[in-house]
Image 1 (tube, rainbow, N blue to C red):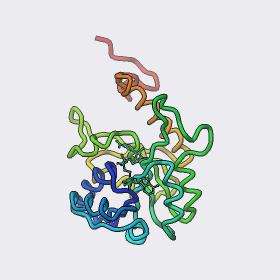
Image 2 (cartoon, helix red, strand yellow; image 1 turned 180 degrees about the horizontal axis):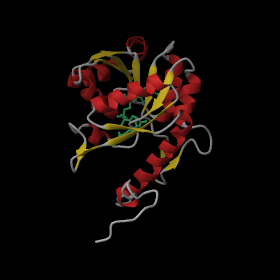
Image 3 (cartoon, rainbow, N blue to C red; image 1 turned 135 degrees about the horizontal axis):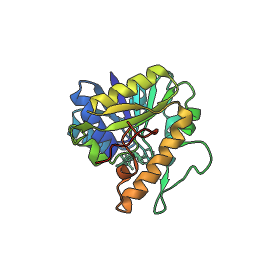
Image 4 (cartoon, helix red, strand yellow; image 1 turned 45 degrees about the vertical axis):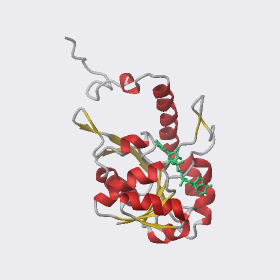
Length: 216
Ligand SMILES: NC(=O)c1ccc[n+]([C@@H]2O[C@H](COP(=O)([O-])OP(=O)(O)OC[C@H]3O[C@@H](n4cnc5c(N)ncnc54)[C@H](OP(=O)(O)O)[C@@H]3O)[C@@H](O)[C@H]2O)c1
């Protein structure tokens, strides 16, 4: 498929490298032509401006600071029918709270700015360094990537892109749950920064909802 990006930074580069390898046509789109060309050259994509990437992509990865995403989407021209994959994190360090507070999630604000597009929240939990792994597999288990979106086709498209990055999509529900995913990122990243392991708080799925733990 044809994939454009808004942003030519770490996430755009790390994710599109997988997608180019998987055979997709990718255009890195940025406000700075030099930065777009440099990132595109490193991953084997083409480069363009933001509006060019908007015209090019059936899918557009939003790899911008969360507070730039809405204005950029509005300025990009018509995005009708596009799948907007939103990996932004509205997180405010050092307390790792949400810039969105109790209001709509970043993904919902983007959806309101592009009502004819299909927004899917994904890829926001893990550091770009994880996305530079080929593939992101730990102890033989591919990374799980929660995906939240309302349009089944768009969710399936995002799921394919997760698989093309060597990971496994996890059904996160509709876009109304994107705020939970953004909050999860804030909480988990806060734990990582504190040197704690968030994986330690999650029991195995077999007994997570009750049942007999295996005691040795
Ligand atoms: N890095 C991670 O590990 C990670 C992991 C998960 C999610 N995320 C989220 O992913 C998003 C991108 O992160 P990143 O690490 O890729 O950031 P980054 O390396 O700083 O790249 C950000 C990109 O956004 C562009 N940009 C910034 N402000 C803009 C504006 N007002 N209008 C248009 N373009 C603008 C930058 O262009 P210029 O170079 O011209 O400024 C750059 O191309 C963020 O929302 C972040 O929270 C990041």
